[in-house]
Structure formats: structure tokens, C-alpha cells
Length: 353
Length: 114
Image (cartoon, rainbow over all chains, first blue to last red):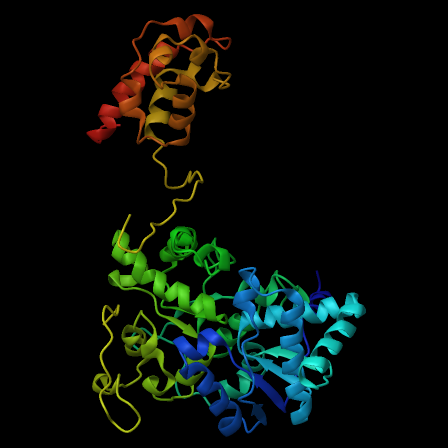
């Protein structure tokens, strides 16, 4: 196939991402488990890229976890999401930036539902008005925050202080990219590259100097699938997914796993600890485990921010081996200190320390 | 059950890349009729040992060919080498020889001699 043909086909896999003026909605998991990521996103957008991002403290959960565990009925979910759109309308914004992949999937699913079943949209408008007196508009642009970082990846690369290259060998780092299933597998048109060629994270890795690893189980679920972990006795299914992915990527000697989904970041990180405890297995080089970072954390490292300010120490698998490879200087003593210098209690059982 | 309240669920897939096919290759080389087996199960249907124990020569053949050798040594001891399976085999597989070769190959594999 000639280049023009390829370009035309690839253009079908792109999505429109707004350039400025975002209404930001947070993620339940991300702000609890690795809050530095969301904090850094706001810092990056407002202070580095000089974009307008608005956040309303009245925003609530999207109810995604309740939805996927069959607890919250869909009419309630649609009304909750409609309320978020109403908050956006009241603040005068038309572009929504969603931090969570579960929420992103849910917003996309609801917009599709309203498109095909206008009666559901009319009912939701009525429910919201009766419950809160609010009205809402459908957003003009809906993007996941990884889409936005992808859009500005070259601007970040232009400001880069650290490239994703092993400082000792000069070779690019081997990076595994893992896309959340609800990002592109449910509605391929909503993701950059669709479900077949997701480019959102690999585009960042390429732009920032790393090497993307292609391994057999690249598109396998991480194990976050809600029904696999909600009941404790079933969690063997969840951890089996992570074990399968990691044993498949191990021969390619990964230095880092990059994810865009809160669940993937959490489970691929925490399950490495569990697998190590249960079976003594590790998947990195030299018996180490593989750090799992979010795209904001990686962008922050590339831009030369202090790793502890980005909150990368709040993962189970610690990133010191990665920081040494990148040649990033850090003070281990500051790792668990508050901003005003107080020592916080030290977490137990961290890996790669 | 570990202290986590769950264990890692084992995936049920056949990994031909990591499975040990040495026993299968040894038997096929020494007794080429082994390759003619179509897993029809006539051998298991007439097997005397299968009447008393959970033993299936058909299942054993499949496991050997897949390289899933873990259970072979324990299972294969149940065979009394009566030879009924050889008499009924529609493909003319010398099943008795397959059993003796499997025992031999298993011991050699343990000693890294295959």
C-alpha cells in the first residue's frame, strides 16, 4: 500500500481533542491511591502549558464501580452524569476532560445511549430537573486526560529535561504500554488509534525517546475487570490476568509499564507484590519488579519535576531503579515527608527498595 | 489458601512453547505407530485397569503428545500390560510398547538422558 493510502486509513483512527478550556473531572481511585498524578495534570496544564482547566468541588463519583457491580441502576447513573454536565454548563465550559478510564467509558456509553435512544435523554433531563432544578448540555468535546497529554506530547518533548534513555548504556528504555479496556475496546472511535492500534501511550513513549515493547499479551486485560476482584474469593482470576501479562512481557526485559487507566495502574502494581508473596516471582531484570507509572508521572519525570512531588513513591513497586537508569537525582530521605518537612509514617513491604 | 484469602487461578491453556516434548519425541522415534493414534478411545474402553482405577490410555496419549508430563509417571503404573488395547486398536498402534517406552522415557528424562 502506498503512503497516501496508509495516511488516509490512519486518519480514520484519529479523534478530535479540544485545545483549551477544559472542565476537569477526577477519578475515585486515582485521587485515593496516587493523588500526585491528578495534581500534576492540573499543574502541567495550568502552569506549564498555560491552559484553562476548571475543576468544581461539587463533582461526585460517576458511580462506575457501582454500575459495574450491578448496584446502581442505569437511570441513576445517567442522572448523575447529567448533573456533571450541568455543573460544566453552569461554569461555562463545553470540553470535558476525564481523569478515569472507567468514567470515560461510562460517559461515552451514556452519550451513545442518548444518541440512539433520545427518549432516555428526555427522561434524564426530567429526572435531573425534578431532583436538582438543573439543566445540561451535551459536551462539544469529550477527551480522556491521556488524550490531552498525547495531544501536547511534542510540546512536552520540546521542554524535556530527561529523555527515556538508559543513561549508562545510551539505549532507549524498554517500555510496556497498557491501555485500559474501557478506553478504546468498548467504543473504538473514542480512542486514538481505535481498539486495533491504540497510539495514545505509545505516541508519548516514542515522542519522549523510549522504545515500545510489543509482546504477545499486549492487549490482554490487566485483571481490573470489576467482577474479578469485587469478591475476595474471586480475586485469583484478577491476579491470574496480571501474571499472564507479566510472564508474557518478561522475556523483553521491561524497564517500565505505562498505563492510562486507574485500575490498570493499581492492579499491575499491587498484584506484582501479591505474586511475589505467593509464588516468589518477579518480572523485571535482576530479580526486580517492574514499576508501573501513570502518563502524568512519566510526563513529570520527563519535564524534570521532583519524583517525590509527582507521588511515584505511593506505588507498591518503587521506582528507584528506573530513576537511576534515567539519571534522575533524588533524595531518599525526602521520600515520605510532607511539604513542610515532617516525616510521615513509613509504608511496609514496598518492593524494589 | 494463602493469607490473601485467594490464590492465583491457573490458566487452562496448553503452552507448546514451554512444555517438555522430549517423552513424546522419544516414543514417536522408537515406536512410530504412536503417531497414528487418533484418540478414538477404544483402548480405554477395553482397558482392564480402567475398570478398577481412574486410568485412561487415551488421555495419557494426549497428555504425552502435548508435553504435559507431570502426571504421567504416577498414572502409567496403573497399566498391567495385559495388551487388550493393542488387540482392539483400529489404527494398529502398538500400545503396549507405547506404555513401556513412556516408562523408559520418563526415567531417562528424570536423569536428563533423553
